[in-house]
Image (cartoon, rainbow, N blue to C red):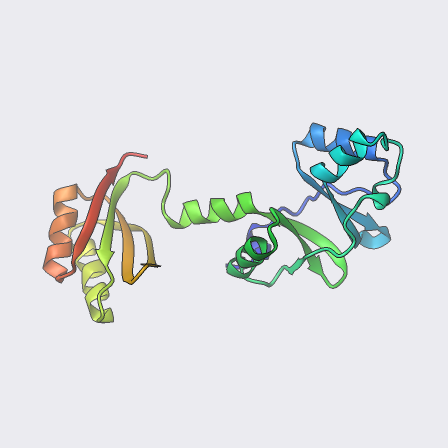
Length: 202
């Protein structure tokens, strides 16, 4: 999945001449925590956070332009970068949002909230079903057999993912339209080790 698939396109921005007071007012009105600073043609020249503006406010600089307090060396991503890359960059740089560029032109913004939403979607959060945590089989054919068994029993695949925890490789599978008993039976028939099972109503 690419950044462009999940970014916010209608980005609230300010110009370098916007005052600190107006920037604060805009953030409060829109419920946002960062404002990209753009010039003509939506060319990105900086970004200002609510913390930047609060510090300026405390120093009595409400009439100063945001260009005086903005970060000029902005960490950005391209709309065709992967979400995994964006998430890694946010983690490494300790930021909660990244402007998205097409060339020098601002076309969107991706935030940690957007990344969390994707994770929730991938894990089937909010959809009733049975979540199975399994020891990841060494043979890929075993995974195929499990999915086929779920299908034969009338189940649907809601979510599927793998994760490494310490030395263990686990697979998380969420299935719909199956009782916990039927889901456990499918795992047993495929010869996969069941680590944990949880019926989720939402």
